Image 1 (cartoon, rainbow, N blue to C red):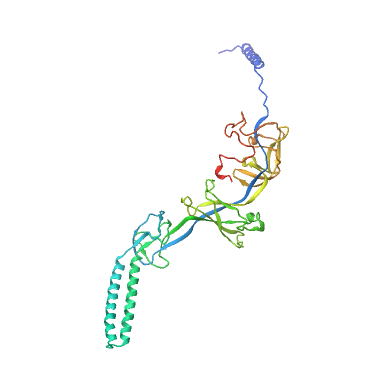
Image 2 (tube, rainbow, N blue to C red):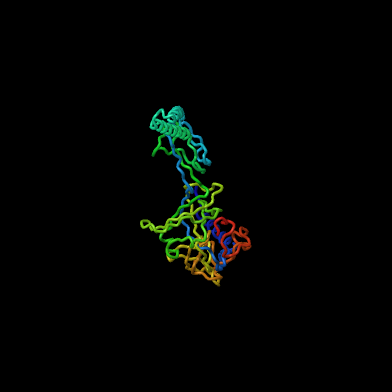
Length: 384
């Protein structure tokens, strides 16, 4: 089909003119104002000083359950992992051979007792020598001892718990031949109340302490932090402090003790131990997300007196809940920015507002929150 070129050009020019007129009538784009940011008003606080390290739980007493007599294991009498009482039957070894041995020992003991009694009258009448009577007395004593041993052997075919606690996995199963000695282990029992927690402090942790080692007088409290971050409700105490430093590892071994009435702690769990070593005054608490690690060092973003972004190098200590403990670089009244950090640049104007301010992003989540305070509701379990 033939197209008239002048007509097409005229149509294009008309479209451009119409678009230009439309752009002139369109409203101008609004100018972007200062970025709203949430700030915390820094005030000096007092926080407990602590050292937190990995640790592992263990039963306060781990007792091995061993067979005292050999034989075929015919039955397991407990459920693995259950709490058992002292004296509770755990395993049954075949009784038949020991019942026969007991019957033989009983018959022998009765025979020697009769012989002793018969010879006693003859010895009194001087009808036999004193040696014959003494030999009969000795034979009876040995037979009575053998009878007692046979009774014990039969009783030991029922293997009982020597102590109360949480039972372990059975090492031998039904039908196995059990023998005494090194092959006699059947299971173990763990006393889990109280629970012990073993850990060590390395050189970097020891360097924070006076004298470079832990003493019982230095530790004011012991806390256990579970794998989910919650602090165990029972407070602990140190029950072992090594008097020397391991020359190979450069560590000091310690052990803490915690009440475990509900069995919440199990042997072998990996947890964290927090040693409270005192109190530090005049420090500031800043949320961990607001502390930035850069090539120039650790810093926070603040809003200065002109409401402009001002980076501030800081010196950090340890964690306190969800906050960093700031040891230096901040002063009372500084306003630390805690959100929109990736969008900030030094000198950029901002519109600072306190947490929970009306109209602020996220307002209503924490109304009435105190600036500079550590998070309360969301991390109550990890606060000191």
